[in-house]
Length: 178
Image 1: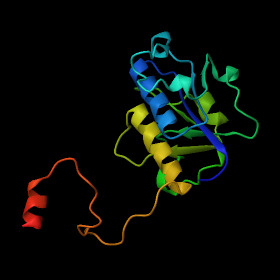
Image 2 (image 1 turned 120 degrees about the vertical axis):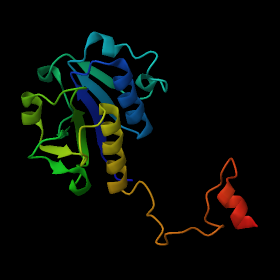
Image 3 (image 1 turned 90 degrees about the vertical axis):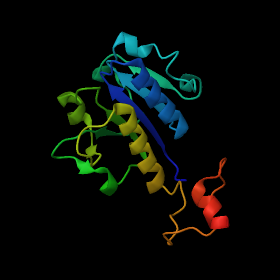
Image 4 (image 1 turned 45 degrees about the vertical axis):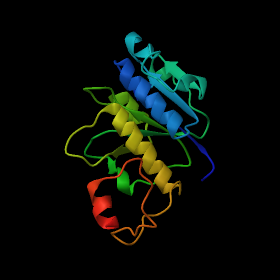
């Protein structure tokens, strides 16, 4: 894995289950920190929704406004937003030290937030995704770009030796073994 650090956060989020899911995603992908900016008070109550208790495993910052936000020196802010001037995620080159910021449910990053970003990136889909899913896709893409996973096999089929272990047997397995 590459050195460096990254964080992820959301602006103006209103639902605790979405903020909890973003924090679980940050924790799962080993983020250095997570944050929210201008979160609705009810979104900050994540006792039920953050089942991995992420706030006990990584720093979480709840800034009231963008002017309160204090990122580490040299940390690039990257906006994840569906705009015409954004770079598509598969062609984006992730920074070594950066923080990703996503917009709220049923909304977009504020103009002020977009202006603070060194880059805007969009996930190429037909329409906007749930904020927690967008966070997961962004961090998964980052992990892929920094060599976090092995490559896919070249063959389009698997031999029995390459087949992943399953907890249950399906009809195709039974037919192949016969």
